[in-house]
Length: 388
Image (cartoon, rainbow, N blue to C red; front, top):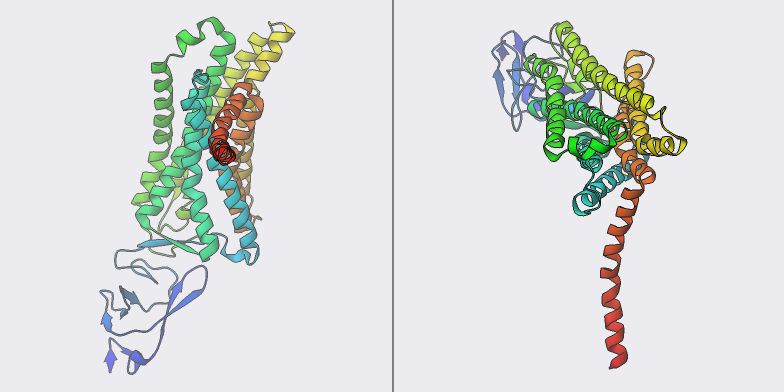
């Protein structure tokens, strides 16, 4: 039997290979029905869909595992090529993620429940902790499941949602650090008017502005990426839907996308960086006029925030360099990106707990409230047994 110039006699007894491009992975499928696609390619019907018998690595219509409208899902490559080292990395990432959740959750809890932590600084701190939790939850669980499963698939809408949330929270976190720098400026340079300036409506307005700034810097590039055509390959060479990695899969020119993405990234980094630097320059000018005791107190007030800002911008610079230097293998870039995404949320609770006496004492009081609840029932039972 001849179909459109192709001899398919006895084809039903053969196995077809569905090629997942960029990784040369083959999955066996037994065909039970044959059809002809709209572009005269023979289709094999599997359990859920028709797969075209094509070996081209890139096409303007359908290809490999994709439906008639183009790519329907992405494959997150992750660190599948590491081999046995994957389990070591899995354990390290899992422990780090648990510490991130525990430390930042503790800060949120004590800041909301301890009446002594009613300063505006702690209001901004627990908002930063909330952003850190969501930020790491967007990426690390997916990377952990990829380390166990080898590779992970994600739908196209899910991929772009992950991309948007990841970038938006990254920018929002820096905007909150900028707000905290302004808070430190007011506390040191205008201590008598601090409570009058940093009222609750002002704090809420600053936090809303931080979230809005994050959305403003994220929407243009994400919208452009969502509107592009993806016809194959569909393997994202990253641990999650990283914008630059997904952009490599676009069927067409991405010059505009690169310009828009770079422009808004520079706006986000330079705007927050310049404002933070300006705040600390003004703080430095004010501190230079103080006595030694007041200088030490002012430095103690800013030490934790300065440390977090330095780590955040240093890790961002490392990620930028790793993407611009072509000699780095993909696995190194992924690990650097993971460190960038997890390092600041991991260190924030430790830095603020060590540097801030009020927060450290509040955490100790909170932990001590739970200890008697676990010990007292045992004492009561022993007492009852003695009496009887």
